[in-house]
Image (tube, rainbow, N blue to C red; front, side, top):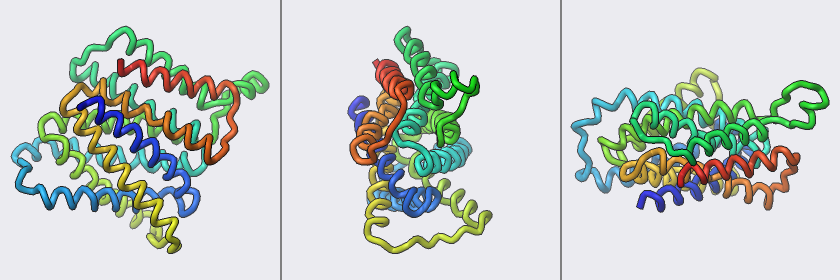
Length: 286
């Protein structure tokens, strides 16, 4: 069940990330993220209403601080990620961000006592090398003797660290509260933080009313919450160090969609970086 949950997360996040890139370029990355989160929260709220009596809330106060922090970190990480999708190549920023699994695994080892196998150590090395190759154009580096980041790479790296810490924290809460409540409450706080962001930035919430815009947002929000809850179910039954890398293999889906539909062009070293990173993400879950 844990492996299946990881696979659902992989396909859900992989597809939603691709669609988020398209939406972010149409209406902006902040509005895309906000309305997608609104859809996600509405889906979760419906489930909560129909299953209210099955939940136990006694232990929630013990973990509320972790949930609030995870919601705050997720908001910052997602904004950085959506920005990277709006300005960078999906084939590149997707694998970088998905390397959050490496952060989650390392935190699980250091703080939860989960053992790191030899293949996982090799996988972490491969992921680091892959992220470096993806993030920059080595051809330009050897020409100018200067590391030049790919557009959107810096934002993707910020998202990588933020998502890794966030999903590690949620895994701790899920072990005690079950798969639903931590994710549901964190989505609530994400919306609160986003509203504060809009007030602070004095940014309007209006978007151009086009069916394609709303279809994209609804599908993104629905796929995201399904993937998120599938991940929560997975880490409630298995080690986070096993489920996280499977879910983080979403670039397999995102990259294929980007290559087929967006016809993105990337240099040879970045292709090797994508392959190495995905191999690392797969290897870390074995």
